[in-house]
Image 1 (tube, rainbow, N blue to C red):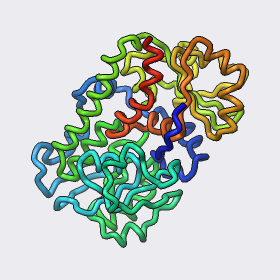
Image 2 (spheres, helix red, strand yellow):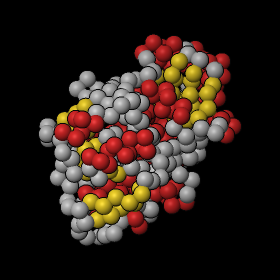
Image 3 (cartoon, rainbow, N blue to C red):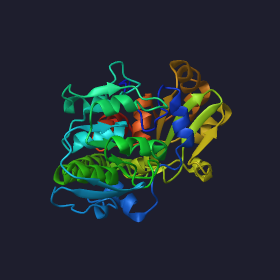
Image 4 (cartoon, helix red, strand yellow):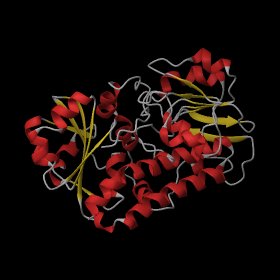
Length: 348
């Protein structure tokens, strides 16, 4: 069982552990069903809509203009004081080699840091707790020259205020559908760190490819991913367009057949009752729980034990499930390491 606490703040409402339920239930089918995006999850050469939106993708020259869901953003000079308003923004900035002056805390970690980013941090970053309202005054006081808000599901609500403080990057299309590769490319262009960003993308994609090569026995094995928000709210991530589903499929795994019907849910998730836990039965069963009590009540229940008989049931913490649903450049290698023992068991 993995107990490493991690940040899971892909959504501004993740102010506390309870908000994970809202994230998993409302963040539509987090992923893209385009061929390019599906290929990008499994191969080390992803195409990017973000790369086409920059005025100079190969030179780090400024000024540079990039496009996002809120229009065009022009950065006149190389940013020196960057603010990152989500975990994926912090990740993308660090992957490009830039340490922000302000970033959001990990609500699931006692010290507010993200385990997979600790070796990238210098101690110069102010970590703030962000709930439903952004700390606009704190942000302005730091005099940023670029604000990264690409991981915000409600970016348009705050864009006008943020853009008055400094040039602000919003999601390319939506935080629910933008791939981590496209986000990284967009951030890299805005920072003038195209080479560093591309190298980071390749490193993470190579890590995925390495696991697939290391465990060829994963091919064709089934999986299920579940998040228990309450005893009567057992959520399955079953949409083929969900990032977590796409990530596991990129390793050769395939979704448990009984979850196919649940994938028709318009929000990309389905729910099952305690009496129907058998639909989760798969070679690899990944489960996360809102509270330790729910883990005991559901995860250790006779019905879950029966569903997992002969299979690998891997319980993960809230940070892991959020990262699976909202992958980031530097987070992917970390989550691969966390799940490696489970992959080894399933691959045989």
